[in-house]
Amino acid sequence: MTINDLKQGEHETVEYKQDIPKDKDKYLKTAVAFANAAGGQIIFGVENNTWDVKGFSNDEVFEKMDAITNSIFDACEPSVVPIMSIEEVDGKKII
Image (tube, rainbow, N blue to C red; front, side, top):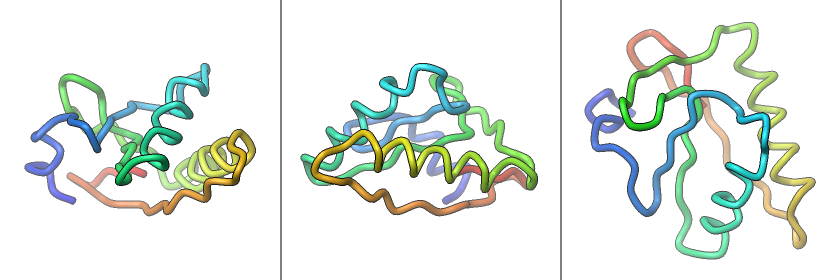
């Protein structure tokens, strides 16, 4: 993923979150919608509307990735297992 990819903004299969929202429903509903459709990406670490890459530190990126995966898996029946990856954009890690 490049900065140019991110600057294309959100659309029907891409949504940005700067961080994990305290209200998990804000991304769980999107994850379920993507799972029920043709798929999609929720990109954590990018500010919505500005597409500014905030990223996560090396210390927190795996903890956040585990929290996101567990939330989606635990909230969905039948189970949804998200495909997660860490990308580096402008020297910052996003999920």
